[in-house]
Image 1 (cartoon, rainbow, N blue to C red):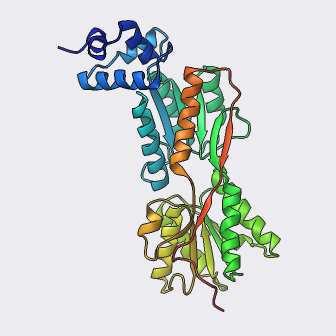
Image 2: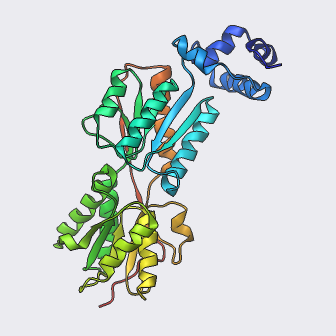
Image 3: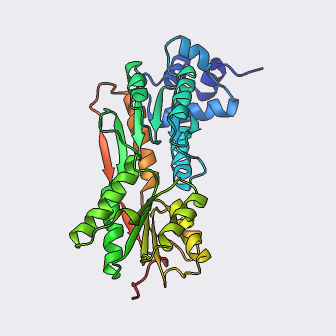
Length: 336
């Protein structure tokens, strides 16, 4: 027979009301006691009816997470970290890959609304901001991670992408690189736009201007990044360094250099962004700008669930974390 709320209460040594309050985030229950109750629920395989809870206007302890692509190591690590936070707090997480396409975003948002999720974490690029505003009009809380929308009032956790871009540029300038190029995802994505803005600003301060041919936009796949990097490497004035707006694009640039008969970093330096697991397993290991992924995940989860549990009227927070330059073997002093 399936376990009931009565079984959970008896096993945990608490009242039925306490179990109910723990499930619905009500009452003054310590974090330790709440975790003990959730462990008993897991051991007895007790699952409250999500549908019944939704119909009664109660919380379902389910969150949605929209990311561009779960195969992207950065978002895979973000998703895993949020999932770990959710599991420890008794939440379930529905992860949706959107490919940064609004039609997929719209379809997934409708699905999550049908599932009566308590809130949604947005980590994907969205052009049609009305989709998010419609959610808020329906009182579905949202929080942004690694992305932000200026016209939207929502909890937001981002890395200082502008600073990250300047760190990358200054590192290459210190190594003597003057012929520089950029390989980036769509500049419609706020994080990519800010990284390139920071990079070009630091070059401007050094008296260096990038022409249009020095910035190539590509899709978020290694194969497309490889094609984009080859366009840069085949230019009459070949760059001595390429800044890539994420590690996936940097891997494509490393492969392109090898196929073009160039050595990294002897002939061309390559620098990425994110500091995912990819950066330490490439050959050579990738110099990159690190984002504090675990901290970002913890902060966005706490902001959203804190909003749900305690303070729905609290002012929205925008948290900006500092990136860090991680120097490995893919960058070296410029030659010639």
